[in-house]
Figure 1 (cartoon, rainbow, N blue to C red):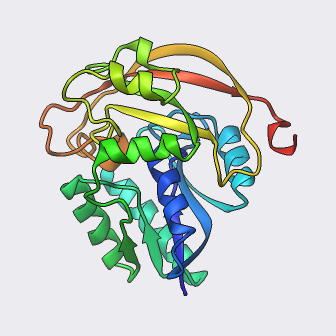
Figure 2: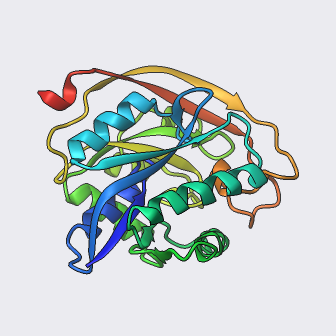
Figure 3: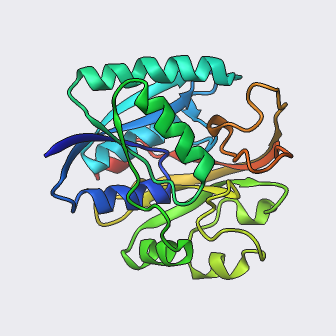
Length: 250
């Protein structure tokens, strides 16, 4: 069996990827890798508190490897930090890096290039699958997720802080991918078949945040965007989730 780690954002696509991978006899996996904004102690781009990430990973029975990133990170800095962490994971005997990407060709090419530099092989279990079928499979399997971030240009605050269900899918405007693969929205999964127990939290405030694009980070994976779009979307709605510390043990 091949030893792999999964790039984990805490959202539905990587969760469905893990669900798929756990049934694949080719791989063994016990490590989730997550980028964390060290300035705010939250998952990069998604804005979810690190405490919730840790509760999530514990409920999944996995090990967590975090990549601590500065608050305003350039691609040059990001690449250097990423390479260092990939090398550390490789030294632990991990040979494959798994992603939940579905159809962004430029993002896949970027990931493959970075991994090639250190000899890690990429794996994309959901690649080119129908995103509408994927999100419905996620729901039908019994997973529970909540929207924690939306691209304000495409989805207003009423889409933030709501569950991923049929009502949510029906409300999506035309042109918005049902999996949010173009960065339209991001999610946090808090229960489902592979969780030992649900993650309990309360919904906090919703805030609109804007970011300054630079020549070095205006279209990168750190920002959750695709370089196919020449106009970087820099305003996002975030819904804060407040963890209930004892939820995993109940």
